[in-house]
Image (cartoon, rainbow, N blue to C red):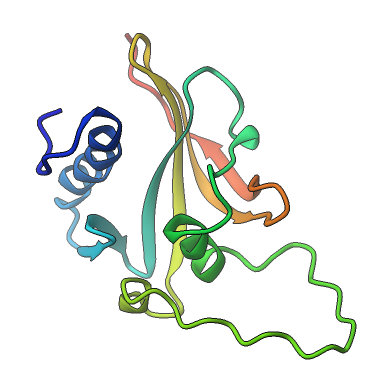
Length: 157
């Protein structure tokens, strides 16, 4: 994989997306590197850039969903994603206290927003589709509900 880690293929591919993004964006004057969960994330102004491979085939980004509704990725989207389009139903009951953020997420200021760079790629075809935008995480089914997304141009093959 030629990554900075000693991870096997599946995890190596996950690591490589962060490393490639860091190399590409580090030339920008306002780009800052932040280590979260053992990965180098890039922050531009008050936006953390999150690369996310959502599919291995050519499907729309609106089909993207996380493998789990818990964990670092889910927490990142909930804490730094857009406000939900549909507010939670208020039944007047006491809400459980929100847990303290993972120590890594506490490194990001609370006003930092996440920008998702979502892409579909396979080992045989390479990057098939790529878009960027902002999305909230639906907890009931792990799908991303896109508030805004637009395609990025792929280089010709």
